[in-house]
Image (cartoon, rainbow, N blue to C red):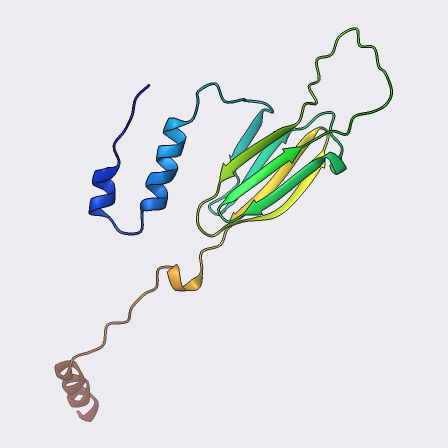
Length: 154
């Protein structure tokens, strides 16, 4: 397993420690981490995203979607039934799970819907007006104002 030293990043930047911590967590996670349940992450347009998770066998009451700080947590726990069922083949896994996704700044969940065995979670990135690029008007110099006054009087 490779290890990366992010200390030069800490020494040369201010305010990027969260990014370095996130990279460190991702790179040091166990490679055998569960891939259950399968999921897709789609980019719908410049500021919209959708996470789709396969949740066959779970009802809406079994599913939980929470946004905590900069994390999206999707969890499912199926209530055990008292019925004794006999399966000849059991290919649909309905074991409990918890999936976590790191969200960037200004990304928030706009909705979630479960249909046809899929849980779709819509996200949008809303950049505040103060952080959006803005055009700065260049003020004229006194020379430019004098030229405008001379042309107006002629």
